[in-house]
Image (tube, rainbow, N blue to C red; front, side, top):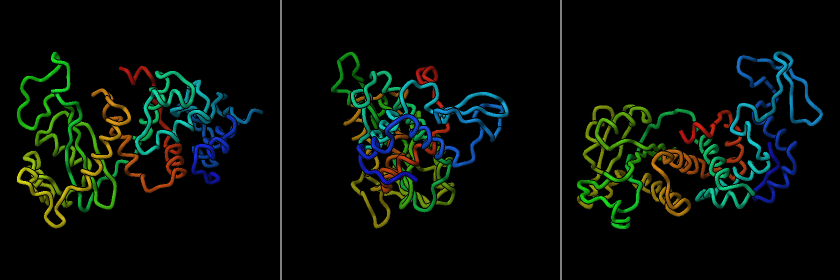
Length: 305
């Protein structure tokens, strides 16, 4: 357990050099039971180099560090700067790559890659289903057509007006967590498929009367308040919780990043989901949760593919 810290000053004081960062990462990753991270080797004994950072496996004779097999692998950025980036991404509205580049002294391109690596960690959550009372709603991400250059405006935008926007489906368990993901469309079968993945059958589902929810009656106890008729709540039947999440999400996108591409939108969605689900934890507990989930790696060529 780390000595308690609440500010970035406390964090920098706790990790003054690379050795302290590596030793902390090793303790969170292996918890005293070190195993070789190289593929095909499960050796649990190693030699420790004098620098206290590198290890040599007694089984395969390969050298590794606490970075090996994590998002930090092959990065030339010192761990101390990575830890500051983790602290900054936990801010209420997140942080842009331009601002992070200034804060930790790297290029904007490097900061952008650092943030996407961290978002891949934030999305690395257990696949548990929501249950009980679950609110469902969808939102659409994208600027208004009338504010665009005339060459990019949509001439005719019928129905719910999402033809030039990206739909995102959200599900929130009252008193629990939220799940959200980018979906290709808001058709009935698309919504049903996502619900069956993320929400346990038989749960009480609250919606806003959208026709795309009709098929959910087969698997859930569906109750709706028709927003189109000006009805926003009937007793416990409302979608206030998920709409509150959307308000946080849109401030994160519109206020911090201004604009995000469709290709990477789901990564920003998962960042907002993590921040919302762990909002009641202290800054140190959030930091430790993120560091403990570092067992995944995102390569730049995969990110831009």
